[in-house]
Image (cartoon, rainbow, N blue to C red; front, side, top):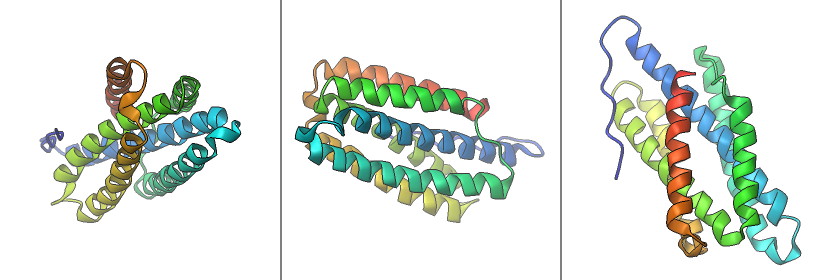
Length: 187
């Protein structure tokens, strides 16, 4: 299931306003992802038995940090402010990461799978929306989406869907992502 692209709004400045929403929400998403992985590493990185997963988490955080740094630069280049919710998203991301990691490695992977599934769908809609009017940005988002898909696929391979109460856990995380997306676009 991919998101439908949002048609351009009518009126002077509407396209610029929509682009600001896209950049703001994508920056917020990458910020949240970095902190989710940090929260997971804070728990699982301390246990020698979880060295392999801690290394995976560190690598995925590195990818997200590259994305976040790029969005920092784009926001500055285009004069777009980040979401005012950034402090909350940092704390919520860390808490989500640490909380799922405390439930065990499969729950941490379930968190990754749920978040990355939502982000992939979100990026897909944005890419479709931007392909004609911002092809270079669409190409960057495509690259980022591919990284998110790799994270999701790794999480599934590692047993994300075997986590305790997986359907409920994934549904709650996805609902939270949808809410954060809507809020971050506007605030």
